[in-house]
Image (cartoon, rainbow, N blue to C red):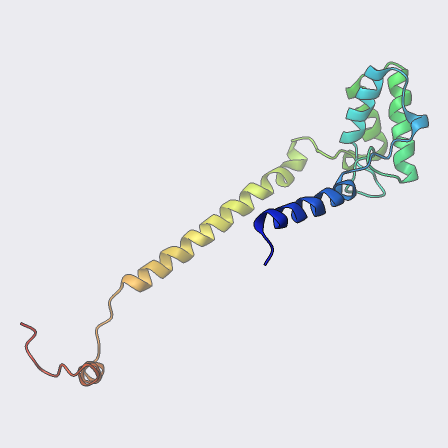
Length: 165
């Protein structure tokens, strides 16, 4: 049997070995990085909010797709031109649609998208409540034994017609 300390050490070593594999690698290439650290920080923040249209579940900051690179360069060009973050976001949305935003706006046309998790959770809780309520009622309702069942019970327990007092 392995000692707990050795087991803990082995688990820690295994997780440490996996750490480089599970940490996200940013796809920004050295030639894309802006010289101004403030502009580069804004570019990274904007890139983290925009979806790669090829990968669809990654930001353009994390994606290696050529289209993501083009979008990263576009964001940096617009920043160097002096555009605000909102203007750049609006420009990209006008060009590619709201799907490019990883966090879509809370608006009338996205209401179902934002409320669906809460509605599904409430429906699930209601279903669990109804199920628990119906099972509880079934368990508490006493059903009288038929005379045949009473006789079989008396024969099985050997109580017969004796007086319980």
